[in-house]
Image 1 (cartoon, chains in turn cyan, yellow):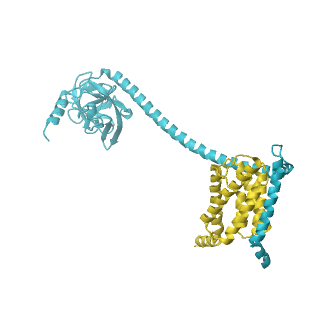
Image 2: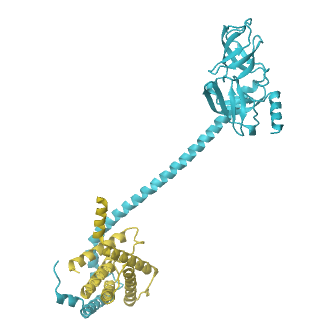
Length: 294
Length: 168
């Protein structure tokens, strides 16, 4: 950098010299203004015209640049707006899809209930249709959770069935959910009858997806394909509800036949079950338990 | 301040005036860039160059903004250049706030002088201070304060520290 001369610095910092320059500039300005003021109201002066012409290219170039930058900013803003709108619309769509899913499920459930009730008209004492929430097959245990509880009038021991046949019974009741024991459970049992011959026996689940009919004497004429239905002698299940068909009959080592029964109800496709009215014995037990002091 | 640097300042002021004036955000940034250029020169304490710069900046402003009478802003900014130089030489003050306040006051003075000249020469109604003028003064003051802060900021030291932090 070139050092400034000392006298020049003094002169520059001298307000008198600056004042003189200021006065000259102001006088020049006033003269220019006065010259222009004489022609005001006209189409402008030559000076103005010249100034405008001189500044036009700069104005055009910088204006174009400014327009470009403004457009870029606007585009960026629009992009952000579009993103926000996209997010909002996605959320909206998700909510609507959820609503649609819920409504479809409700409609399906309603239709299924109607179908079940229509088909189950032949079953005795149908209270209503309840959805199956969960089915459990584990170590011989065959259970299910159903979406109805004490609030819906379910009591322990209420039989469950589908139009095709008996399914099981309610064992534990919650307020809105209950636990049911299926007939396939290894500890489940029901009084059964051979529909063709009328012979009575006890049906037990084998824990492996089939049932065993016990207490049928070897003198019985039971054959493969015979219908087994509930006998109504156990105090739990109503009489005359189909349970299964005889799959195989073999002579056991003792006095009774060994009969395997295949369930008529498709346990693998249980989505809804019909809740049957509990037998008078079960109802009486439930009322007794309710009134008993704890 | 060297003449080349003054020319650069004035050129930057013209460019910024067009740039911001063309943009849709001009309402938010009504900064008097020519006044800032004048103030930057006045800061050096050179009366002659400050007055000349003010006059040139004002003339350019008149031309750029297509004022009905070229010379009004030149007149006003020449006076402001002189006054700001006087302030920078005689009064010891600094800091972004003080500089911003001085520039806001200068902007208001500029508006008042132009309004007065316009009323005198064009017989137009006299408008010394308006809401736009206040907003323009505020924007100019904020911009000036920001430039002052940036000018005084120890960028070299900051950069050095930043590099050291990265190396660690």
